[in-house]
Each structure stands twice: as C-alpha cells, then as structure tokens.
Length: 182
Ligand SMILES: Nc1ncnc2c1ncn2[C@@H]1O[C@H](COP(=O)(O)OP(=O)(O)OP(=O)(O)O)[C@@H](O)[C@H]1O
Ligand SMILES: [Mg+2]
Image (cartoon, rainbow, N blue to C red; front, side, top):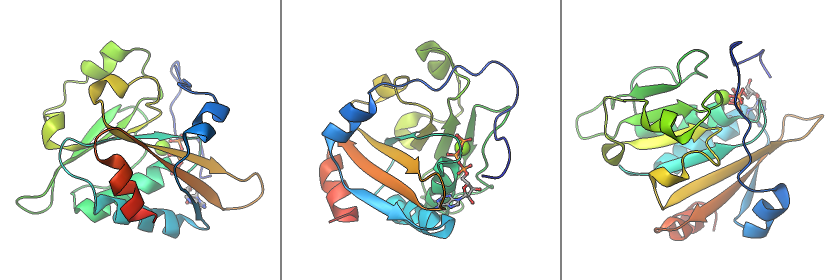
C-alpha cells in the first residue's frame, strides 16, 4: 500500500451493510488478481460491460485495490483525467475522451456520514447518463439504483494478491457478471 490515501478529518467509514458471512452466502464468482496490473486489466474488462446509469459499489479494506480497479474502469471507458484516490474531494467526474462516450463518476464515500450527503454531492452530471463507481459505498448508496454490481475485494496479509468477488444485484447484472467470469 502506498501511504495513507485519506486525509485527516472525521472518517465515517467503514460502514458494513452485510457481515462477511452474509456476503459469502450471496455467492458470485471470486477472481484472483496477482498484481495491480491484473486489477487494472479487470477494470478495463469490466468497463466493456458497463453502460450509462450503472452503479458499481466497491467494498474492501484500505489498500484493497479499489482505486486501482477504478483506474482500469476509467481506461476502459476512455475517460479524461487521472483516476486517483480523492483525499479531500468526495467525487470526481471524468468526462469521456471521445464524443458518444460515457462519463465516469468516481465517489469515495469514506468520509460521508449519511445518505443525504451522497444526494447532496450536486454533481454536474446525471447518474442516469454516467457510470457511477463508489468506494466505501456499501450501506450508503444502494438507494441510488435498485440494480447494482457490488465488488468485494480482499487482500492477503503477506502477498500482493487480491481477491475480487463480483456480486450482482438486480437488473441484468447476473448475466453481465457471467459474461465476465463464466
Ligand atoms: N493485486 C493487486 N491489486 C491491486 N492493487 C495492488 C495489487 N498488488 C499491489 N497493489 C497495490 O496496492 C495498492 C492499492 O491501493 P488502492 O488505492 O487501489 O486501494 P483502495 O482500496 O482504493 O484503498 P482506500 O480504501 O484507501 O481508498 C496500490 O498501491 C497498488 O499498486
Ligand atoms: Mg481508494
């Protein structure tokens, strides 16, 4: 892990919508990512099945690789700007690099305390027109979209390896997950 990624302030996270046991019971394929490059590549592949209006919620401890995955999604969606872990900014909008592309809204909800704050982000893009990816969003942003992909990430204590569980909720997410991890 490369240093603290969150500023001082008063972190509200982590919130846990489900216990680890409940998450495991939900199933969904678990992928192993040996390196950060693999994680970026997964993000880029995921971008291939994303479309405007999608909500993706990332869970996992500090340094799990959530932002690295979003970097891959940003590359796959071909958006402008560098995807970084926002320290003092809660959300960033990355505009598509090409006409007809889909903007990426990258939210880090670590310091958000309530549902209202997410609604109050007052982004200059409509969620319906963008792909929204939220780090630390479990238990906080589900109301934004009945259908969502939740990605639970874990890290081994003494290796670079990360595991990624893709958990589809509603919509056509199950089919899309199956196409990613048959
Ligand atoms: N297999 C891997 N997958 C992803 N990242 C990895 C892997 N191996 C090493 N890393 C490193 O781990 C770090 C992951 O940091 P990242 O900022 O993505 O975590 P995060 O989950 O967003 O943390 P935070 O909760 O602080 O936002 C990066 O420095 C990355 O290079
Ligand atoms: Mg992060």
